[in-house]
Length: 180
Image (tube, rainbow, N blue to C red):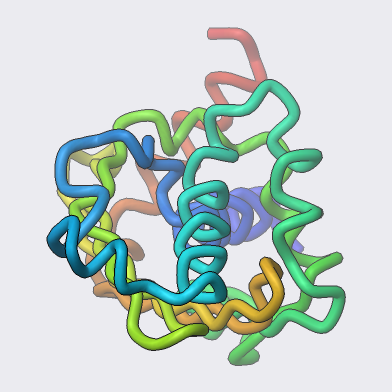
């Protein structure tokens, strides 16, 4: 696999799976009234807490150490970048963690617009992610969470806009590798 393709895949997966590394304390990170929060079941509250920890992990000193315990060992992760770059629809925990390592620098400018719990096990988030080519990518992620572990993650965003940003991402990654 070429360096460009490897870099693109790692960044794409970080963007789609890390959920843009957004700070869950950002404005708009929670959705719903205080009454709705009080009415939330303990399982729903745990699911929402797990998703917030997922976004916060991009800011952790040990990003992979913060991410790993949030995922079920049999998690299924789906994103446009996985299909575009890998030729398959999904990856598992080990492959995701391997690709997510070392790409959090692309996630610093991202912002969680909202996190919404639906029922006990479904959490939906909307993210804004600035791309290195100056574009702003909005993505929506659906999390299935059981017992505090993410069991399924589906990430949706405009794959064409992401693909247009790949040259800028690859150039930036190469400059970082060369210390330029």
